Amino acid sequence: MKSQFDTELETRLVRYAAIDSQSDEHATKTPSTDIQFDMLRLLKSELEEIGAADVRISDYGAVLATIPATAAGPTIGFLAHVDTTPQFNATGVKPRVVRGYDGGDITYPDTNERVLSPGAFPYLSEKIGHDIVTASGTTLLGADDKAGVAIIMTAARHLLANLSVPHGPIRIAFTPDEEIGRGVAEALPGDLAVDFAYTLDAARVGEIEYESFSADAAEVTVTGVSIHPGNAKNKMVNAIHLAAKIVATLPQATMTPEVTDGRDGFIHATEMSGGSSEMKIKLILRDFELEGLEAKGRLLRQVCEAVAATEPRAAITCNIRPQYRNMRYWLEKDMTPVELARAACRAIGVEPVSIPIRGGTDGSLLTEKGVPTPNLFTGMQNIHGPLEWVSIGDMAVATELCLKLVELAAEKKA
Ligand SMILES: [Zn+2]
Image (cartoon, rainbow, N blue to C red; front, side):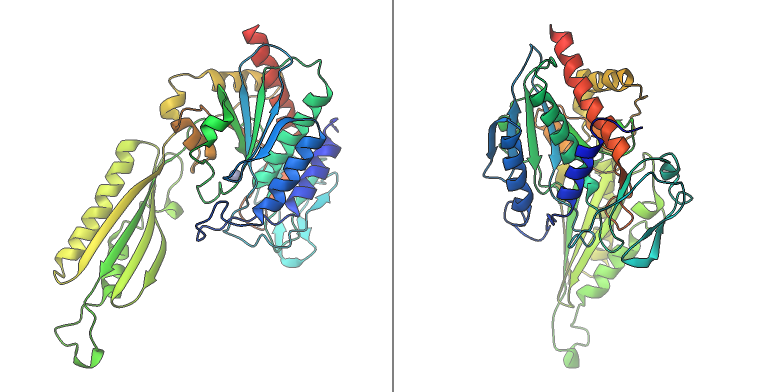
């Protein structure tokens, strides 16, 4: 069944997805890539067109806007990120719509090496009759998080055109660089100025997430002894062999992303570079509990020390820095934003589910900085790869959720 929002959601998603706004973890500027401004400027002008107030692009590259209140109620923020992941080709995205999905395999116009099949992805088989948006086979789609952007824009346009819907002040933020963990600038919590907020960045219908990983990043530096190989006997210490030893000593069979799921954390080596005189290993450490995260840090240090002990002439350092923390630590103290989202979800006939996120969102950092920010579903599936897809029908349910949520919040306050 078509909702009143389907056409708008589809048009917006297709328009936004075609814009390359990939972030770049190796760039140091903010936003990390200039192309993100193509999305930011477009959204700024679209927000102005639909009549939003206080529309601006901040110096850290977020589009901020207000939907003025029509009733008393808490100030609620809605956030989505404009960047797409650097993990996969995001250049030349050609979104296309598979109308009235028939339940079979979905093939791609630009490659015959890939198939999106309901056998491999059972959630797809629940979407028979839906309009499904995919990329063309060689790029990601970028529904992560342009589905979120389209949902917020559609809900905002609806509220600004229907002033009879009661709601408190609503703040909107479209942020850059979420995919590289830099979406929450120091000034964002203050600029948002909300009682609480939601990111539209979760997946299947019903998902209301308030638990994320706690995350640290580590950099191990191995400094060897460099000397011409021709007269290196008993003198050279090759950093490559020591770095390889460190990686080989880490528990690959029990504590890596490829062998863990559910509530188990991991140590993930993401990058190794250098040469015989110096090597650098980058790793990320993840766990839902701080004690578990600390234990992983201790383990990594022990491995470095053990390898260092085998070669006193080498220098091995291990720097561990915090990235983000499980937002549950703060949200469980006041579940109001989560309970409100759950009530809104039930009110539109969807049973809410809360699954711990094996990752982080802008909400993890925002919550830590004092803005309670659970994560709401958008419908996005198979993100960060060529099989990414989203159902327009799912996006419409997410739009209804946002509208119901602001209405319920206003009723509660009144
Ligand atoms: Zn995302």
